[in-house]
Length: 410
Ligand code: GMT
Image (cartoon, rainbow, N blue to C red; front, side):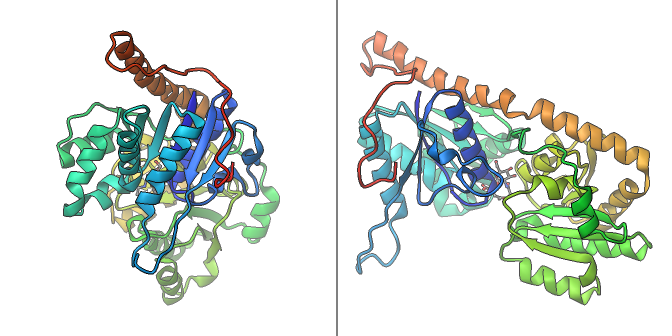
């Protein structure tokens, strides 16, 4: 198949899933075209095989024109135009839009410009539905974008139910969870790193996120304080960056635990530091799936998470770690203490976390499910064309097509 993928190219979970999916589809012989405003992080970067040079992966940069009259950038329009141009030159079979607004919206508009000569698959990731789309003025646009897509997927049952409940959509939504590349995320021997990070034998707690309010990063710092006050030697590794980082640093100083808190910034190679850690903390106020918890589980690290959104679908309470109510810092500290002080419990949950991540959520299991969705929308169009309704030929195999238009970086 000849597949266009649009996503946020940054460190966010939706961009990571979209990029890993594209890489995996390319490995499986499809031609994959990323249509984004920057090169997706996981296509390049240390610790990741540099996939951008594969001959069936293409990068089409969405170019933004500037003109003094345009006070606000016309990104959605530029994206739609890029989708139309790439679809025409590359003869795309479908566009897979990750994140509803504006990506699915732009794709649906592109489809109309292309006179329906393309299929649109939309994947809902989380904040597109639970935060952004709930802005009242966006609701009709969200409903329209979802209902006009040929197929819609959501990353958890929770997100599927929220979408149907919040937007009253009449659309089948298939749940396809996040997945993991078990060659990248695996338990790595990190004894040396552990010695560096915990020279006095401290237990290591770890949290990775984009430090937005919804992640409740401050809860991890409060929990660390409780744990330290109980006389347990521990350190908290905070990986990533975002709006709340400054406040978190101030809180660590205020609580007098600055020395036990390490802000490590954005990291492109996570498996070693996760493998060196004892417990992963995810106290989110809202979380549709929790990709970073899955990454930790695949490295053999048990998780203490909140019960927000789809987290209990991933982290099974008492089995792969513990689930506590959102905002219950005491319970967060309590459950983490249990894992840090009860060796057999830690070993059992760590093993279960690893087994669940690499069994249920391995990319080899999940990527074919996306492929089946693509085939199903293309088959539907083939059936219609047989019946004389839509005479578009279906291309389900690799085919030669011209390279990208020169204004793109193919
Ligand atoms: O909100 C984020 O953390 C980033 C966001 C995104 O869209 O980039 O992540 C969402 O999508 C991920 C991939 O499907 C999910 O694993 C995250 O749970 C989800 N985040 C939230 O729902 C808050």
